[in-house]
Amino acid sequence: MSDFDQYEDRELFDILDRELERQNTTIQLIASENFTSPAVMAAQGSVLTNKYSEGYPGKRYYGGNSVVDEAEELARERGKALFGAEHANVQPHSGANANLAAYLALFQPGDTLLGMRLDQGGHLTHGSPVNISGRFYRFVSYGVTESDERLDYDEIRDLAKAERPKAIIAGATAYPRIIDPQPLRDICDEVGALLIFDAAHIAGLIAGGAHPNPVPLADVMTFTTHKTLRGPRSGTIVCKAEHAKAIDKAVFPGLQGGPLMHVVAAKAVAFREAAQPSFRDYAAAVVANAQALAKALAGEGFRLVSGGTDNHLMLVDLRPFDAELTGKVAQDVLDRAGITLNKNTIPNDPRSPFVTSGLRIGTPAVTTAGMREAEMAEIASLIGRALRNRSDDAALAEIRDSATNLCSKFPPYH
Ligand SMILES: *Cc1c(COP(=O)(O)O)cnc(C)c1O
Image 1 (tube, rainbow, N blue to C red):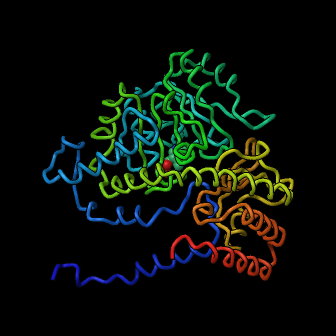
Image 2: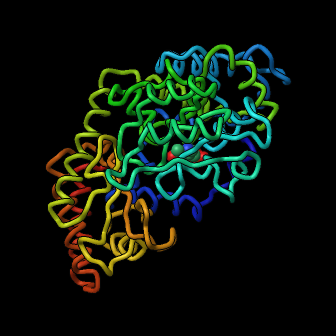
Image 3: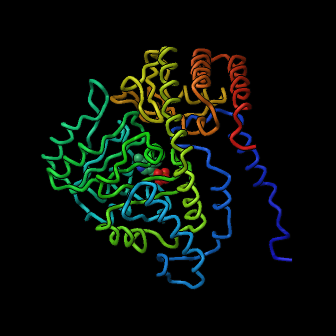
């Protein structure tokens, strides 16, 4: 009998059971979340968690790595093939670490970098003063235009010419439109900057052919593997061969210690899944669902930032629906109605990031669960009803029942 036969942790596993119940019975609309496959979870819950493998395949610090070397090699090869990349590093523990490693590999503290404004959709790791990126590097921000709430590549070019950055960091966490890598590459060439494309949110849309692939144009692409890509919670870097050595050294030993080999294995599984023809259908359905949901929400009286979406998410301006309603209150009300999403600032939001005038809504998870356009119309109607009846507990309870009923037809896990 092994030592752990004596342990039984009902306390913790009851919590897991309740979280499974929550995921199965409420509507998941957080744009950065998804339901990963049982195969990904099996790899992530495997014996590979036991192995120390500091270093890279064939160059490890400890013995016993010949088998896990194969797992990492498989993940690297599949990651490269998925995006047509020259090199892949599958060890970053998260998207934030992938970005940090890319910066560590290519820049010196104090270097000037361009990144998207946080309050207009950029990420903390693109120069927030409370993040290491903003403390170690001199980030200058670009934003969206006032008129159409989209990136204006001419404005970015002017800023790049004035600031002469070492790199442009592209990518966003709350931007509903395609980010076109070609004009960004052109600007970088004009000013002698590198192009780092952070595809954290849209990696799955790129893999599925729904968005342009920045890899042929970018020096480095970083991404998370758990958002639209639908894999384990983690990060990856792909890059040109000329940056491979610097990137690998920055991830280990520069930034991290031993890799999470069970997660590396799960990334290999996810990359294979994302290379299947059915994943192309999935990526297209994610976008079609987002567009259907955006249209139905406009019909409920909400305003869509930039007028709609061409990716997996939308930003909703609550003010035309109800000038008094904040993102904070809307998030709480919808939580009670069985609809999970997050408050978000909208461009030029008069309210603080803790209150906000907007919501961010995404379709990756509901699409994985099997919902399509008809269900998006139903969800928009539930959101409108809940927010109109937000001080009516009985109405909210009724909406929660409707949400549960809808989910019961599309359980992600049986
Ligand atoms: C989510 C996200 C990240 C960070 O990913 P974590 O895995 O949470 O660290 C980085 N960049 C962008 C644009 C993101 O949306």
